[in-house]
Image (cartoon, rainbow, N blue to C red; front, side):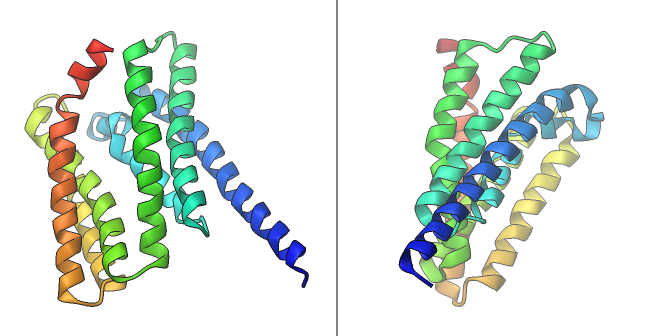
Length: 214
């Protein structure tokens, strides 16, 4: 097979991943907006959860064969989810504030590539890089679960946030068994999870104040 043919196939594969990122982002962003109205009380936090968006970006990025494509797909998913969410809310008669657009747009540009790289490192690397990748996404899940229990458990279902924490812990254990082969890398994965979780709570608890200032 000629080098040009191999290169063409690679480009096609990269574009396919990005197309999936765009389609998944737009569709799930719109579903998030409508889910705020449709979901039962026990699952209502799902439509207001940043972790569901982050996990979507992470899962799509797992399809990417290269780190750059994974980073781009992570950002594409979050940006398109924001677009889908805003458009669907507009159709429902709920315009979005400039603060929301700026805050979550910036989050998509910053966090999207990091989630994509976490996915790529977890799938294609072992040891330290896999520990950082798996610990990053586990930390996001556990961090938002902790935030929910600390700040909004009186207005939302606590069982949802506990469930999210359990999912994050199960993911951490699965990553440790699947990709991490020593106690050192396992400990690094756990430490990364804890650091990301704490940082998430600290930053997210100030998100409302930041949006009001934008």
